[in-house]
Image (tube, protein in one colour):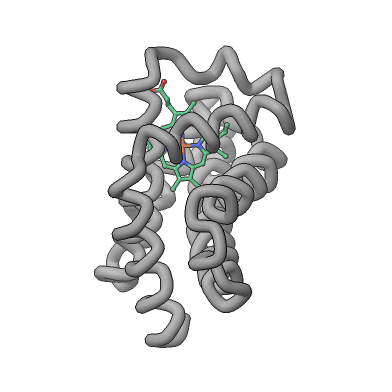
Length: 144
Ligand code: HEM
């Protein structure tokens, strides 16, 4: 990711943090609209959901802080997600809901360049998490 993209992501993250409840409402409404079967995976009230969304965004942002050395952490997170019941195809759904939420909450501050930057970041994290899930699955098979 370019320094410009890093800057754009930090700016939109700072803006989003000021509207975390609205962001959570918009994100989960959109997510369950795209795929209602994901609803049972998420438990808790709006407070908890807002915190979970911020956790997800923070995990994405941590990639910008220290991309080197984060690989193992993201792989482990991908393996945990498989245990939550998350499948590979769900990543595109969550990515879509994330982009739609950013667009709705940030309005005209979500420029085409900011959109590209978020897509690049999400894509990188998604790929590493999926690898972690696949490795954990292969390790389970090998030991059974
Ligand atoms: C780049 C993509 C994603 C990131 C960075 C991310 C990040 C996180 C983080 C940091 C947590 C907190 C717990 C933990 O670390 O294990 C979490 C929990 C969770 N995530 Fe994700 N996530 C991503 C994609 C997804 C996808 C595709 C789904 C599928 C629906 C999903 C569903 C969940 C669920 C169900 C939980 C647990 C919620 C609970 O505690 O009830 N996540 N995620």
